[in-house]
Image (cartoon, rainbow, N blue to C red; front, top):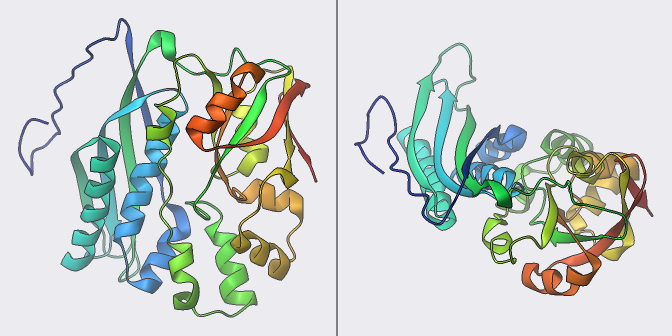
Length: 296
């Protein structure tokens, strides 16, 4: 990192040693209404870490490692204590991800945001050697679908979760706040341990769940058949489904249901990849139309 705090732009000196054809990978995202839980708990460092980890995972599915991250905070008026916690969350997650926090923007916008509330967005840039890009093009029938466990809701499904927990069940946010503020897992360090070429496709299971995210990496003539009984669904999702009277189809399209990342590998590599990733075998690839098929 070059430059100083408060500059008009962030500077980053690039080093692509060992790469023949480096390709930059960029992504931008937000934490969504999980912020409402942070406001209720008056705890803000975890959503800062969520923001970084979510972005890291989004570029990791292409095989990229993170280089640098920038944040945006929009608010009515930001209290110094809240700002300190957010920056601590950003910087800590960046440090653990091997990613530089090179800048950001804090915009105070009275009349747009409610008092005491804010919004977050993050932008990440990473790099991958072109020959090592993971794009799903080599996926074929007979391949194995591996699931990596999530750490709770991660950063998706909070609008529905809040409606069920706080409106229907009338729970105090502080009674379930610790569970709801669990930090979104960063899977990139684990994924980087897998030998080159072993992983054919990766899907970050965020908004849209397994139903909408897996097709983003599937060839048009392949379906991912998921055995939903092959892993234990965490209790938070069962509580939400039962008390909200939500159909299974909707649950698997809104929430991650305990699977935060999916890796697709050849049958011959499944055992080794499963061991490295601490993953579970949750399905298979069959001929189809590029969709996810859930078996209950």
